[in-house]
Image (cartoon, rainbow, N blue to C red; front, side):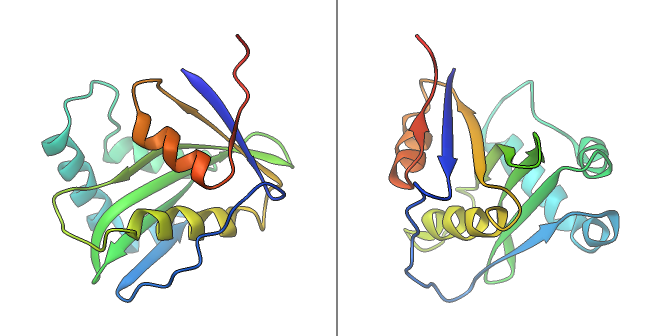
Length: 156
């Protein structure tokens, strides 16, 4: 597992706009209830695409929101296509985890960059630094975070 850090100072913003892409920030149970079917759909998509014992379920989603975590739900043409979770570490830092964008729904090629950049900009209004952990085998995720200016901080 490698640990990465992205700061406001090192962040490289993706500025291309895409039609039909949007997201919702879920920080409370009311917003979650309005988007619960999207989360259920995305959990189903994930379970179709991957076999992972650590996958969360809808009960875990409620628990995370109650515990102060945030989730961005990503939409393409009003269809849910992904999510990205955050939790507070301290007043300056947060941790991002469980980034997922489905392959079940076709979408523009650079849409993952758009989603990652826009969610990062919103989080940087609350925090100065974002930390993340990525398995070494997940080359696509490592390339993604490097492309936005993240630095590997794992000690050897």
